[in-house]
Length: 147
Image (cartoon, rainbow, N blue to C red; front, top):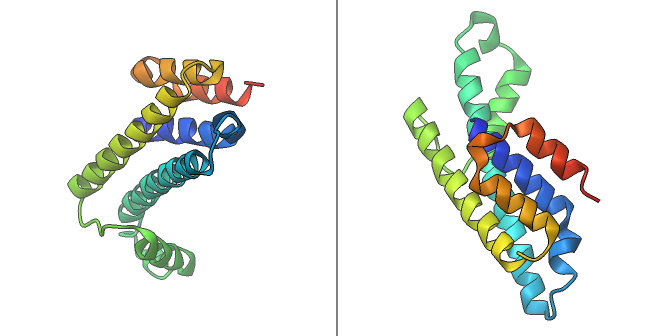
């Protein structure tokens, strides 16, 4: 879950600084490619959020009062309707997180490789390659303070 949080932070940072990626793209095809990367990146991050919500929901639903809670039931319906693959147990949830993280990692590395001369992506590359060494707060603070 911590790794998924870090990838979410990096993905939001990349989308936030989209102009750094797209400004130098010469053709409409490369701009479309960048848009596709960003769309897919956000899809995988969103799926991780849904997996986490489903996992948390499975932990709190067993309490007596929560079975009748309308908000919790509406949340369950929304998550079940948007999640790509139904999750029945903890091991399936962990597997889905791993798949989504791996896909996000591939997209982020491709974006970094295509923009490796820009300072923003040099910093991102450092965080991605040494991710276990950095707390999420440090990654978030760095990305939010880049001008």
